[in-house]
Length: 158
Image 1: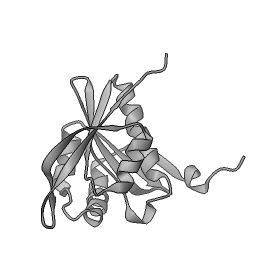
Image 2: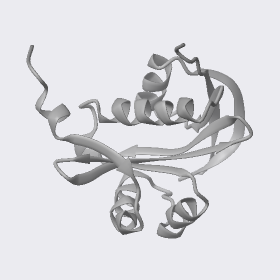
Image 3: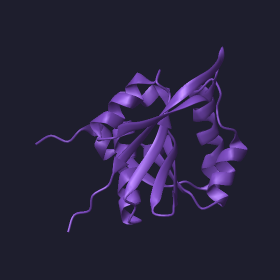
Image 4: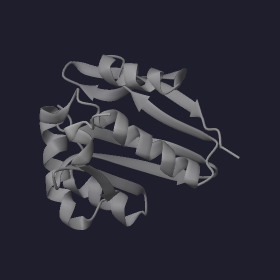
């Protein structure tokens, strides 16, 4: 059995304050209306589950997960454009789901732009389904864009 070279050089860990410049840079290059450095800092200070994905000891992705009142909410998940379509997004999402299960969460929610077809395909692959629509949720170049609200029920192995 051969091992994918990407798998041997990929690791995940909790985000540290020193990661914020790199994370904010990936965010800025990935989105037209990015989160600021301060928003990421506030997520760390609030105690959210903030994770970075490293390839060969370089941060190439991150996620922010809020857990409260028995449910979880994926607030942000992103892979640097240079590293998309090699499975890193799925690896990061699997880590987020693992952390939510470890916190005994029963449901995990997220919002996604309907125009983000690659993300929607990944979420559907992981058994997320649409439960609502949030009109004019996202800032867009020409006004606002709706958000699809997705949910996944989490199960636990016994």
